[in-house]
Length: 614
Image 1 (cartoon, one colour):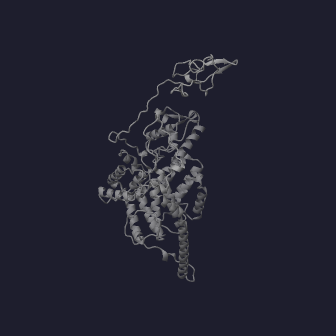
Image 2 (cartoon, rainbow, N blue to C red):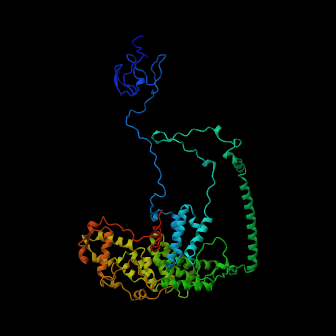
């Protein structure tokens, strides 16, 4: 045998058995050549030509291929970690975590809020006990996320807490959504008994179409496959049924229209004027307390209150609001129920105007501008028809309309403001009413950016005028501060800012603002009569000035710090100043304080939900 053949098989290992050759470089053909890492069984034969990467060495007739002969994928000699199974702690050892109110399902929070809105403050303790039982039952059943909370009724607070909770729990279990039926696609192959190295799962074998079960093969798949095929074959039958049903409905509607037309002709007679009062619903309900429910069908006369009962219900609710025995959400629910009874009975007299006026005042006092706008729109329509309440409060609500449209003139209310001013100008003596005169002066102060006059008028606002002026006070103060630091250099005294921007009342500083005072406005603002729908005789407002100069300066300094203004010698009180040059590019509008997402900080929904654990 030649030298090229080598000994025993024609090659000679150059590295120890079961190890990897390192990357070496050599000269071949005068160029640099780099060889890839190879196992020793692919080593270069001694004295021969280098073999290719996939070329196996020659073996003699009796030579056996080594069992360790494989292509290496890594040269690392670091020991590989073994797979470690991690167990799940038992429920007994699992720690009990307390959920924050924001982590609770939105449906649960909405249900709790709905229950809190419907009860009186004196019933809050019993309601919390009932809700705690209901929520704990949902947790124990695992239905906290799946239970239909929007369909669960409010607990009956006239019963005992345990009985009321049991009724609600029974209702929720009967109306809980049924689980989805199992499908053949939900079947999953069992988990492989073992895991490969590195914690990887074994590859799932591909299943050919010939291995899929067929009805003739039996098994779980074949039990209902024939039924499924029949359902798929008749899937268009429902369309035919719906078409026939719609045809019948259209014929029935046409017949009803013909009957109504015949009836209207018989009622109208030759005059062709229909007396719609003949078709109005007449209620027979005698309850003074009735919640609002959205109608989805024709109202039942036994659930609608007639006009005498509505008048008593309005007097009862106005008395409860004035005494402070009910919150705004309860009052709103009762007001909307009265408004609904007026609509379905076509009541458009003085009673309807009284209900809308009282509801608008309650909404303004609480700060519910959306509900106020709905009432104001209905009142404007009723006033245009010449309908008035016994108190004749048209001028009061026209003044509210002027204030609201003036504040939101830049947000699409400018045309409405012009129409209101035209209505006031065309009505004799309406502009002389104290409320309307005050509203017109507020509009003039905002248009001319007369900040001193605006905050003086804020102090003398009649009725609920401050509730609408509060909407613009934060932005107006910041706008004034921006112009002050741009116009005054190098500094501006704190006492000037405090007096001009309404941090102290005009009566305290009897110099600049006292000349704008008016005896008529003082007389209106000092009224001691509680208006229907209000809880107090005078609405203080959120931004009314302080009587004490020191308190006013302290509040002004705190606000300037929130605006990021640069203060100098603030510890000297009225002698302190604002560095206008340094503050010009630093001031910013502060965020609103005590803002609550659901609108009422007294509901304490977050505090109630903090008591539960998961």
